[in-house]
Image (cartoon, rainbow, N blue to C red):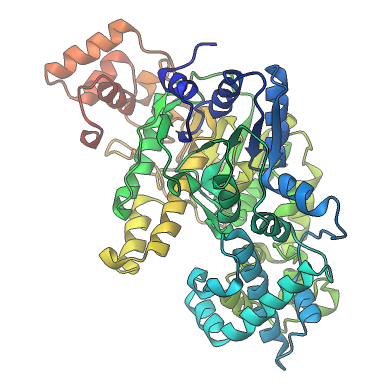
Length: 587
């Protein structure tokens, strides 16, 4: 296969390096070719982000005939070193009431006990994902952002830290089951020496500090690869490892997934980071070509908006079959196991029907919402929002979705997913909901956080919101439908349509701000009909010469677009690509 100059530069290297690879730039292909170019007797370890990526990567390395690459996840590697030949019992995690019982958390107020226990669970996760050796070296209060939650943590910090240390000690002694985070931490603290000549660490932007510490201490040549702008797991205490090492940086800037118009959108979204004094490191170039539309996906920022839209599309006959990434049931449960139905029963006063112990311990919805605010339990907050939105219609609506859900997403008329669940996926057509951040919201949030005095923690949260939109729009291979509210390419030519209210299903079903003839930018514009036939087609040399000549004569861009039958923004991007205008001149 023919590699780009950027990919060839990676293969030519023989030192530790960072590969900053934009969405769809063929990083796995690059790593496969890198492995093939090493000596045949090399011992190579490829560290994948999760089990799904591990399976896919193993298949790709095998298909390439590379049998000397060991594919693991950080956790599978740690499992083999810590758990495999031990007496430890692994559990998925513990609920707040379980921590209360195991640790003897009894303040005299059950509601307070649950909140303390929730923070204990989070402190454990924070410590296990960190690089430090002792709990006392961390200040858990620094990662709590909600003011009410901060106040609670500060008031009970001594108790929270004490119970956290006791919980870790119980796991270490095998008195209780160990979590996945725990055995990864134990692996790190054991300072393992891995017998590999090369270690390829994928998705480095979402690595834990604990695993990065293991990686950096190895003797072999170390390659860490990822996308600096795809970090979206900060809430799991992940760090952007690509920016935590001092290796030389190589960039892969050509995306083979999507075309230049989607690349323009991605560049403009990332350009919002200028408000956070975090300018993008590279400019993305779209090198993909539109293909036949086979898979369609609707992506939302939250479970709430996604469920609303799924119900709308089904009720109004837009789809007959659907698929939720990660299983539809995962959208109806909070992280600790509370279900939509438990919260609905609490809302209706049917406490006898509540199955979850935490929810059963709440007397009213107000008490539950107080718990959410003091624990920053966003997954439970979304469950409450869904219940408030649909009320007693919820069970029948969810049942209707399940009845029309297909296990194979290839068979679905529409795939639904939050961005966190579809990371690493790609679809032929992507529709974004309007619950993502936009530039106006970003500027407003910055002002609320003190403007120039905004904290680094607040900057990181806002940067991650920008990353989430970037990841969402770069899932497309051919067509992107994007609401004007979040479209960074809004111009005066756009025909603005009213934003549908969250509970107005009919307006959602009509997609008032989408136009198939100009789907890449999700808008209806004055010249959309003239360019319908050319959208997505490769530019000819004659067209490029005409555009350059007309622009040199001072012809307005919108008139050039009409003459060549192209979109206004497509012409602007082509002018930028030809070096005739700068990115900042676009708008």
